[in-house]
Image 1 (cartoon, helix red, strand yellow):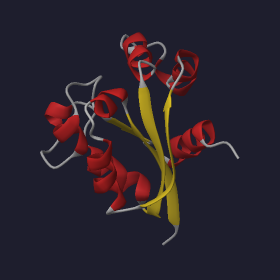
Image 2 (spheres, helix red, strand yellow):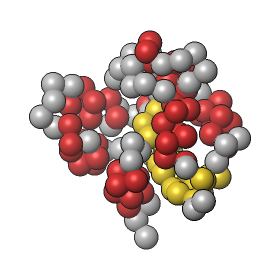
Image 3 (cartoon, one colour):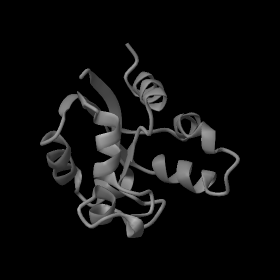
Length: 134
């Protein structure tokens, strides 16, 4: 099997709640961390990042939240890393996620849900290039 790469973002709510280390420990036990950076994502960059949601009612809340303070952006590598990361983080709505998932443990609601992860190979490539341009 070939290794894949994906992005995991620890969102501002989890950063503010000092959950970076706990989330990284969960992820690092399963995958290799290739690159990691902590930064505040600008409103303009958040708009571009979540462009596919711009017609949805939650778009403004989403981009305002993502750009509100620091996030931690992590480039991961592993076998089947995209699907497995999605399983580890859980449903967008923390209350619908199983108890062992990151979003159930650290998320508050559908907006403040602790983390983002690429949902497909196409998204992963776009998101890796978006945050870690060569």
